[in-house]
Length: 363
Image (cartoon, rainbow, N blue to C red):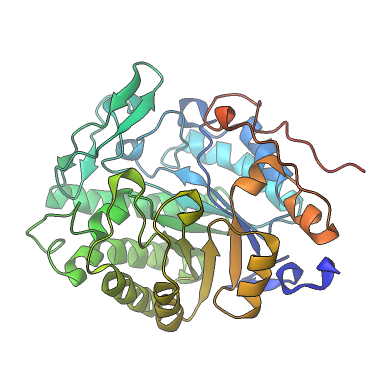
């Protein structure tokens, strides 16, 4: 019986107890009108509280990080109050929830940002491609400003304030978004980071900003409440695979282990046509990092159980299956069929359609 599988047993993550080994992966859904979390979002997350751990959509620490239309923030009082509704709704169903803190960096357009905000990146290298803006439609990415030493300092402080705000809003912890070509990932890559100061050049320097953000957040809210998502071999948002990829992430995992953050979450988007994350890099990170390792990317039930049993993963994150199956855990546990209809046109729209209207299983 599925109910007896390891994936459905409880798991100790830092100081909290998860009901199972299933995480709901972070997914941008663009429902935060005015960048403020709302009642519709509370319904969406509470519907999916059967996950052992929910990781929220990317939520920005600063107006400078508001790259996309209608993404949520965690830098002002109204946003904190909005998120409180969501954490309360999830906790009322005995779920656990981490806030993913995301700064989009160069993956941005000024039309999506408030007046006075700036598109910032390690270096002034424009990303290839376009993004949606509600006021001007599809637009090329804006050319970013290369961050000054003062802007680096301020941005780190914004991450720390966001982490503190997350705890005030009732979250069980935070996941730093160091994947998918956003700001932290931009610092890691020699193709997006051409700096000639202490934050650029060799592997240690390129990892410096990420490690400082992780350490300062851990010092502020507790290391057992801080995690990070990484995407070695990721090519989303005009990122590249570079010769030092393995060495970079091996070094990063070793240093994150010293900080003793609670988990590393590895994203593998090969199921969506990107390069596969080689098993070697997963094993390197597993070897260097002693706390929880979450794997995600195209998982089905059988492969998830297999990777939990063989020890390469401690938790497995599911993404799209949680969109159209709010009761995913119960369906997997009971062997019920999954809902396969997925309204992809409604991934990033503004209302409940394709968001909170997917059916729960009914015999």
